[in-house]
Length: 381
Image (cartoon, rainbow, N blue to C red):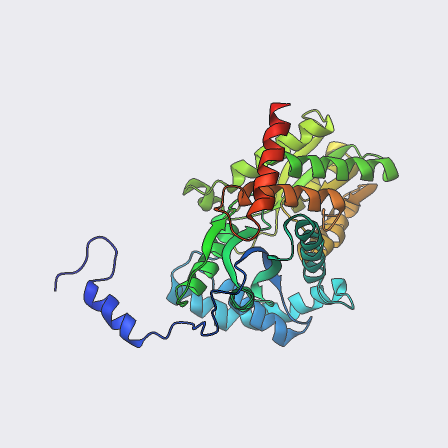
């Protein structure tokens, strides 16, 4: 048989796969059971504990994702298993211990609280047949485990919202991969909608502006406001990833809402890894240079992080604070992430509303139609 030129597997291979693959069963299905719509929010993930073994498990899963590290697999396997997973887990465990809480990692705690806040708001309008849950791309609760739970609850329509406002292949697309991989092993698939980004969504921008204004009202303003985003290798941009552009658009629109001129704010990128060039300017290098340029007070906000985590609480508020102060800075403020503040939850509810509209009527169809009519009338006004 000649090899396929389209990238698809030859029919004989598909047949062989079908004869050996065991699809996830759902034997308790009943046509009398309510058909539910599910909303799944996701975030990056967290280790189960601030220990070296837990970090080794977490980092192996995270750094094995080809969306995260685009290096030839055999070479990367050697680097990951013989170098990184030997050296990095103890260091990362030490950093996690500095931010760990009695309830677990900050990211897990905040995401759980976000989920509960969204559930209360959405079920108050759509009823209890709207299932709201959360999962982590890496670690627990895992995407497969939560999808299975939602299937057992009768979810036949699913809206997935990764809490990454700016799209990147290493985050949003990786989440889609995980959902698709789980679905590939299921006998019965739900209808699926996937929100890939919301970087310029007005309610999200308004929530951030309100949050920063509130911080200013309590603590005053600094000479410079940095918008620090998680970095990615620069070649991702040159190969077509829109992340860099979406970060800049978010920042520009947010600065406009805050009434800042071009000298009062700046976009930077943090958390680079390895030796290749990443998106610039780098957050740490910028903070080291600002005091020498006469900027003695700075505030940092991270618009790409929906919840506080290691990268904000330790990397920004501890490590980068130290860089700035050691370079001659006099005042450093980290403005917390939106977390589960009411304005943030309201913005996410509005986003979810917009993406639920237009689905064919199901058990919660009357509420959906009523919301659609309400919004249409508001638009006409």
